[in-house]
Image 1 (cartoon, rainbow, N blue to C red):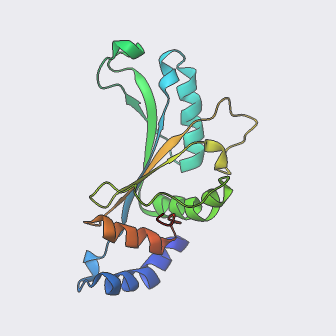
Image 2: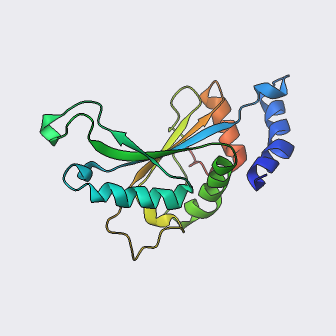
Length: 181
């Protein structure tokens, strides 16, 4: 069992249950999945860029990503329906907890001028999305082999029904939220 999941079950779950005033232990919010998405718009001209992004995402997530294709044609961007434009990976169970632990304890401290993540990244249903501008903050990536800097979106899906419950869960798990100004 991962270190974070063990801490969640022993310490965080009872604290959250008391904080949120829930009588049933199964009603306490928990992490369900984490989705990492890397959009490669330049793949329209050069498909090899998508292969490089896929290899880097494999190193970051520890699992082979799926290729996302365009849903419809957009002539302005010279994009055709069905053309590969992004790759994504969905992490669940142990890999999800391991990735979240690395994200909070290793990756965020490596980001330059990091002041915390935006607390306004919730979608209204208890899910949180954050964007990373650079993949080089991940220790798995060898910066000598990187052709170009790529950003990514990380979506943390929780079982929380409200943003307040999800905020409480993520804060207890160690997510460094920025103070409201």
